[in-house]
Image (cartoon, rainbow, N blue to C red):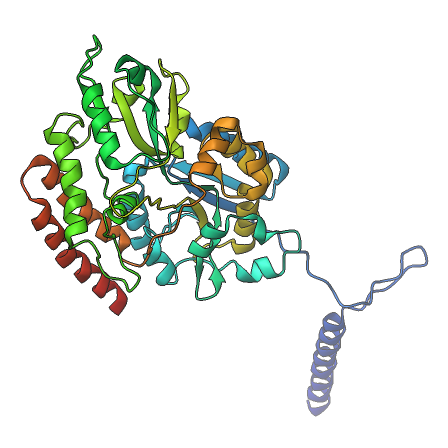
Amino acid sequence: MKSQSRVKTIGMLIIAMSIILYGCSSSKKETTVSPNSEAPNTSAPTEAPAKTEKASIRLATAMDPTRLAPYEKVVADWNAKHPETEVVLENTPYAEYWQKIQVMTASKTLPDIWVFTPGLGSQWLENDQLLSLSSYIKNDSALNIEDYHKMMIDYMTYKGEVYGFPYDVSAQVLFYNKDLFDQAKLDYPTDKWTFDDVRTAAKKISELKSDKGKVYGLLSTMAGDFTADSYFRAFGSGLITKDGKVGLNNQGGIDTLQYFKDNIDQGITPKPEPGSPTRPIWLNGLAGMMADGGWAIPSFKDVPFKWDMVSIPAGPQGQFTTGLGGTYVVSKQTKFPKASYEFLKYLTSTESLNQLITQTDAGVPGRISSQAGLSPLLKKYADLISNATPFSAINGTLEMQEILGKDLEQVFNGTMSPADAVKDIELKGNKVLEDKQKK
């Protein structure tokens, strides 16, 4: 029995040793090589390269439909040349754009690249929601940052960092209908005209008759945006002061609002109606003059009258042109910062801006090199706004302009006096600006 037991024990030991030796040889993955086989690869195994995720970039614009086709082409050209990247164009009417951006900010769904207006977009800039481009610019020897319009780069520089590239530069000018001036036997406006000169001519033009409807001498009132700053400064006031306060609660502010209110009361300017744009009045040849920016020029292509333009008129304190423009920024939350920067650079390149701005007469491009190809018409516009200066574009400007717009509506409807309006705008506006600076 002992002999049989010893044999069983030895057998079990042999089996166990065989299992151990087999396991060791398996773990070493030794390979038996036949004479006809290739030598094994004894180098360390390498992983298969990870598949690169295709960069899907959302581009948000706020363009008039007449300006959208060139953007579609620029995006299509990029996508065709860069299969590793797909840019998706999302356009929203400008009247709804900023509200939509606010909603997307709250839901953390901001586009990768989006239209940004200095002042209106200050809260995103100051709240660290935009991607700084400075490190990319520093390492990009192919980029000539000095080719961008200096005023716009200054607008987009915050605490020494650059946060966006401009696509255009704009400011208001005074457009006038030559045909109506001829009918009224009036001399054409000049760059030396004052607001009093405009009113005198507007009164005579408003007396003209047309089968198409009421003729107005001056289409423009004031809007609750940066363009109002030109008017306030001309009358000795200002929208926002250099120290970040509302600057229009003074006689100059009152006189500014009173001028436009009187034009409505005298029948030379139509009363603004919510949801009813007034530009069709101009396009139909029923307005003698209209203050607007270069962004409006593409819509003049087929107007049934001759027109021209001069500088914004001067007020008691002189002639002032507040300049601004459009830029594109990259959201800090983007999953594809490098790809977004590369497309942003392409979108605002000389070649692209030639298509988007220069060749469509859509204003003055944000790159100096793209201005060489401007039509004679746009070269004149560029000269007229060459003296444009920036306004105080600080955090709270968006809310401040909403307050201004609501009170302007009441002034023009006769439910609030200019004196009460400037007080109300100052009270509400300063509270917004102060609250923004505390955050």
